[in-house]
Image 1 (cartoon, one colour):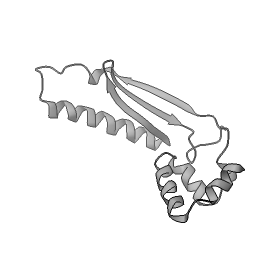
Image 2 (tube, one colour):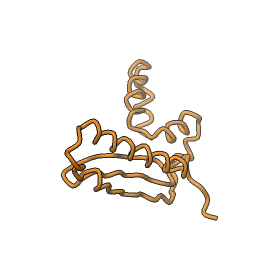
Image 3 (spheres, one colour):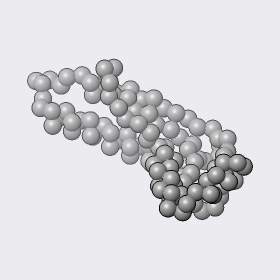
Image 4 (cartoon, one colour):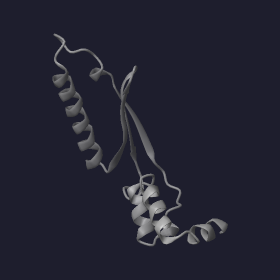
Length: 119
């Protein structure tokens, strides 16, 4: 309650700037609910499934040491295929990264705005 009073006491110019900065850190689905006035539905408990997908074949060197643009093409094709499957099944792509262990993709199902009843 005290925080609400402090936020409401901010000058309008500063309040707008804080809102813009916070948007970058809030999921689109949550932001849309808040902006639509559904603040009571934002804090909910839900079942989510998180996938950690390792793609070691992208790390392996291709025969003949192919050029970087060909290797990048393989990464792009793999990424597009995974995105197509995720979006068709109403999943969300959270992260795609590469480190010394290879490529890792983190995806989730059941996020706000993309959940389905278990029936």
